[in-house]
Length: 189
Image (cartoon, rainbow, N blue to C red; front, top):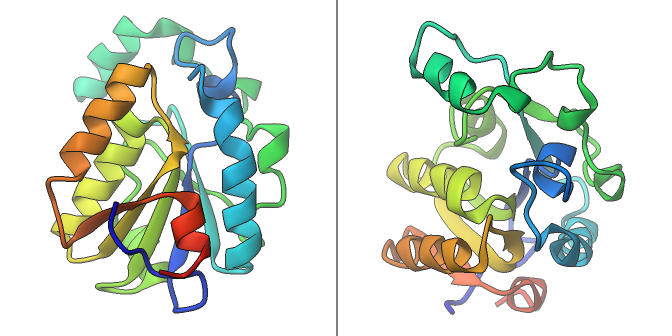
């Protein structure tokens, strides 16, 4: 693990997709590890105060693109954006004073997020799924020049093996991406 920026140095905490679709054991995309990450996510959010952003994946992508085939493969997720599948889990309520950043993409890095955290800004990532939306966000943010810390024990993968594989891949990108535990981030190292 590497040194991580602390919660008071202008860094933003980005909580990726703490939604029913990724947390429920009834969902084909539910992470069996999500519930154990929420207390760490809550502690991080408390420490970051007003510098917390929460994202939601929304099924609003253009079906004429490869997203059309994606939704054919995963028809259970092809629901209106108002479906309760896309609601935040109750434990995520109040994590941020801001409205959720709702995007139809796995990766959440883009003009919307960059306009908030700033060009070359510092972000700390937590949430689900390590092997999809967290990974996609971390790589795109690093590629755009952001300074990224992934809180490995505040991310939940689809499986333990997929979580470990995604963490391994993100660990190949220092110094743009660093890996830390919640305790390390909270200690401000």
